[in-house]
Amino acid sequence: MKLVKHWIEKIFATITEGIVGALDVFFSSLQKWFGVGSMPYIFVLPNLLIFGVFILFPMLLNFVYAFTGGTDFFPNRRPWVGTANFTRLFECQNFLVPNSCSEDLFWRAVFNTAGYVVAQVTVMVAMSLITALILNRSIKGQAFFRSVFFYPVMLSPIVVALIWKWILQENGLLNAIILSLGFDKMPFLVDANWARFWVVIISVWALMGFYTLILLAGLQSIPADLYEAAKIDGANAWQSFSKITLPLLMPTMLVVLVLSLIRAVQVFDIVFAFTGGGPGTATLYMVQYIYNNGFASPTKQYGLSASSSLVMAGALIVLTMIQLYVRREDV
Image (cartoon, rainbow, N blue to C red; front, top):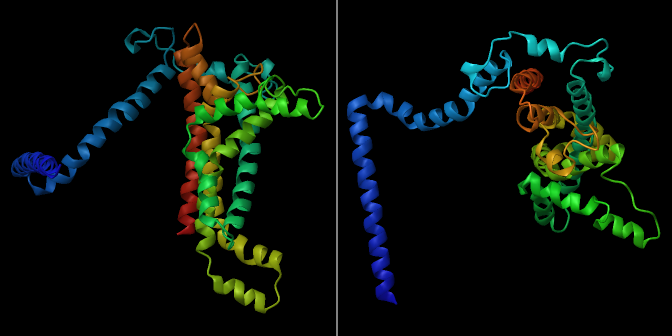
C-alpha cells in the first residue's frame, strides 16, 4: 500500500513539475516577445475575450435588433425601421390604461413590475433589517441561524420556485393542511391577488439572506461604546435604535435598497417557473415580456423584444447611477 502511494505521489509530482515547466517556458517567451509592461494585458486578455463574446457582442447586437424589423433572426436580413419599435411601445391614448395602448402587454408588464418592486423591496428591506437586528444580538446558536437564513440564497431559483409550487398547488402541502383543519382549499395559483402575494413572499424568502448579511456587517461596524454611553444616559431600546443604529446604518441601508431595487426590476426565473406570468397576465413582468416576444412568441418579434430591453436598461442605469451616488456620498 505504501509503495502504491509512493508511486502515485511521484507521478503526480512529475506531472505537476512538467506543467509548471511548460507554463514557465510559455510565459517567459511571451515576456521576451512583448515585454514586461505588456504582461498584465496578456493575463487579462482571456477575461476580455469572454466578456466581449458573451456580454459586449450581445449588447451591441441588441441595439441592431431594436432598430430593425421583421421576423428573421439574422441581422443582415432584417429591414431598418428606425424608432418604429419604440413608437409602438409608447403609442397610448392613456398610459394609465394599458388597454388603450398599441402594445398593452408591455404596459401591463410595466405596471406589474412597478407594483412588484414596491411590495417586494419594502418587505425585503424590512425583513432583512429585523433579521439582522436579531442575529446581531448575543443568542445561542448565532452562527447556525446565520447560515440557515443564508442557505436559500445558494439554492437555484428554479428549484425554489418548483418547491413552492408543489406546496401551494391545488393538491399541495399547504392546502392539505388547510383541509385537515376543516377549511376549504385556497386558490393560491389561480387567483391573481394570491399569485402576486406569493411571488413576493417567495422572492423575499429566497433572497433575504444576502441583504441580511450586508446589514449585519453594517450593524457590527457600529462601535459598542455608543450604546453603552446611551444606556448610561438613560436611553431605552427604541431611542438607541432610532438615534444610533438607524442613522449610522443608513448608508448600508441605502446600498441594500438600490441593490434590491435593481434585482427586483430584473425578476424572471422564480416567476417563470412558479406562475409562468399567470394567472392571465397577473404576474407578467418586464423580463418575461421580453422573453415571450423574443423566444416564446410564434412570430419571434425580436425588434420589439430588444427595444423593450433597452427601455428596461434605461431604468436600470438610473438605479445604478443612484447606487454610485450613494456610495460616493458614503465615502
